[in-house]
Image (cartoon, rainbow, N blue to C red; front, side, top):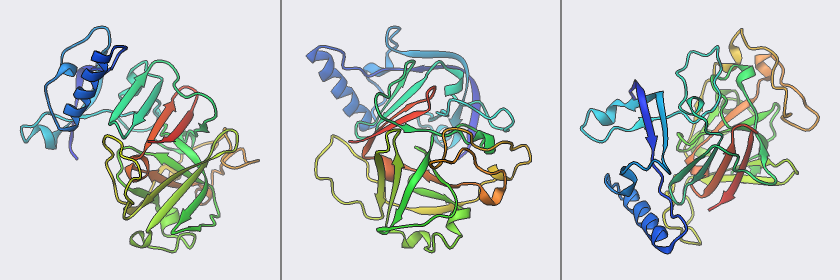
Length: 294
């Protein structure tokens, strides 16, 4: 995917039902229009009260879209913090005062907030930048990894990166090519990733090669089959990496990950096959995440 980087103003329009029945109906119609690919509607008219306007900011324009004459797709990084040593472009979110995100994949909405959104018990997030990651992805320690109904016994820590830009599951080659996961990607029919909340409750993300029909009927839920592919990460090989992960621990009683690259964590990039039937809330400032079913 080619991206041309620009510097200018970014305005994010709101589709908000407000308090009245009429406003709620208008918001419902606007969402339906957007799902059908409409390019005109109330969301295209600037609203000084509801819109978020940031300028100047750096952002990307996807060339494969703009070159074909279509409306240009924008490339906006949703990580809040960046590794200053990494040779990567500034993310959109780090150039804003946004402190929290909420994804409702059933409704196809993204909420950006200047205030925390996650309440109550939540999943603590980790920062992989001390190990060489280019940005602070939204990462949680994996409690259990279950493949084809069988729990896999892992010899080193494992983390799950929530990646809305990925369709299936991308697995670091430290795990994919090991005896801990003796299956090719095509043989993985189901995958369940279990995460723990601050109070020790289990939250599971599941995906399968053939998603089962939904029992309920949300307005729109895009179904993504489980496709598993490997990736080599150079994060843990970099000489500037120092210290390891300090807090929160990856497992009970563990306070850091060794600087030895052979002991670096396995990484799972968890995509829409796992997320499309969830509501996901992330507080960037407090490093907490909430997951609910649609």
